[in-house]
Image (cartoon, rainbow, N blue to C red; front, side, top):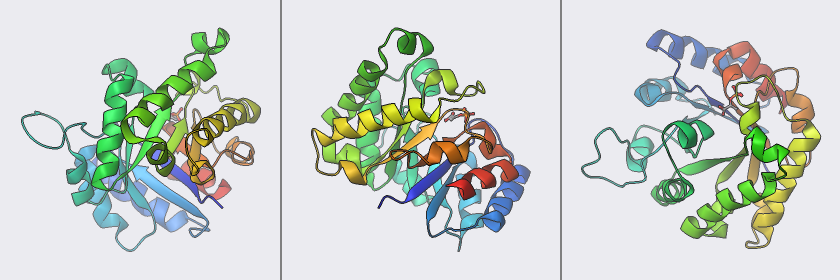
Length: 248
Ligand code: PEP
């Protein structure tokens, strides 16, 4: 059975004070830690502070991005080895904001996934379509090409050993959530695509992301191929995040 994962993506939010209070509130409010894994992904500069606060707790640490390079003259980059060194378990790769705003293409995302995994991190690969792509019936083709780029870089078993987050772009930060059925259809498609290339498809955790809130989390997590969530806005309020974690 796949262990549920709920990961909070704090994006460009936070301060030392906020990290102290939010991390403590999350640790203290979690129920059922054994059944559901919980992770938080603060900005790079707060990872070490968060790691110290998480000592002794089951909450995992993740980064929001990782360099595709291992080391060298790459000003401003943060490597997978550095993320491991400061206590990260996970690294998000290919978030739609990075694809759209920082020109990360499928090839770059594939390299980041592979480099992170080789270093010992578990990559959380984000995939998903725009509203135009959904309306034109291209959702499966778009998601398939995003997955195939990672299979080319890391192999199908590599992909299956990572975590995938299906995040329809039209649902991110918009308050519009995919219905549980819409999400389940794409999650099932993703699992079937992996199954065509790997025997590990049933082990792969596929999260849903896109305006998950306390009032819609339980119905999304009840779907057979939804193994948890990647949570943006609602991960910044301990109360909301805890309801979502506990729903999983
Ligand atoms: C995200 O950015 O990964 C995300 C899912 O954001 P939100 O929950 O705010 O839609």
